[in-house]
Length: 350
Image (cartoon, rainbow, N blue to C red; front, side, top):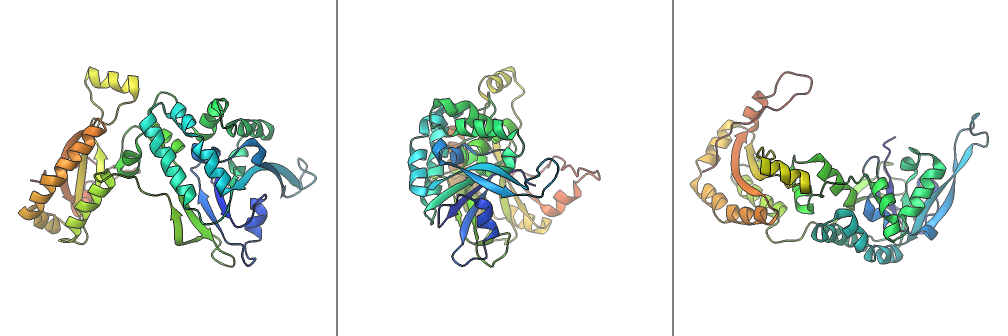
């Protein structure tokens, strides 16, 4: 069991997600299913429902001495997508109270709304069964009911179900989606606020694990010079010359200065720096790119300026580019059980 929740977009009001799944061979029973993160229910999912959306579901199980009836009752919320959107529209203050930053909260709330508005079927259901199985059933239902209150009374329960940890500012969506490394607590809090928007079709008579055909995906973050867009521009420049090349961001270690430590303790500071690793399959490919002055001029000119501006907006320092080949990276793996990647002493681009 993955101990995760599921968000279902259905053609009919799905009071019983279990019956929906077991009857998925029925014609017209196609639906969309989004997998939530393990051990938590995202804040946006909970904000879609209210306590009167909770409905009892009888789940058939095997009979044993602890369950002689061979069944149990769970409560799962379901509603129309239109009503879920209305509930979420009213929930921005909750996002702001949880995140403690109105700009960050608004970005996660906006993306959750955009995801809901993109769903093609008229009904929405939340299956929290695997999460509730981790708690006492009665206590879990009481906490779930409080989480659906739609008011400040829901904050404690929303944090409990989403795994939100006090004292760590969530990463902005742009950093959460695009940057490796960083503060795990801030990443976890970003997961709590994110809609986790990737819904796969479950089609009758099809692969029981779902289809990746035409999934519904949360829209990308907006912004002309956001980190994802700028990375994609660089990858396009690289692959036009070397098809196997790619790039990714890496956060720099937190500052070791007293000021840096104080900043981190007080407000959960951003990584103090951000660099981009450009890589190729072979060392020969890397050397050809390093010798391409037109490429280096493009990367270190306008794109670097935009990255510097973007990083400044996030309170980070732009630390530049490095380039290496996977050929060399593989030689730097230690022969240990964990296969730790040693620091890459790559030549700076330009």
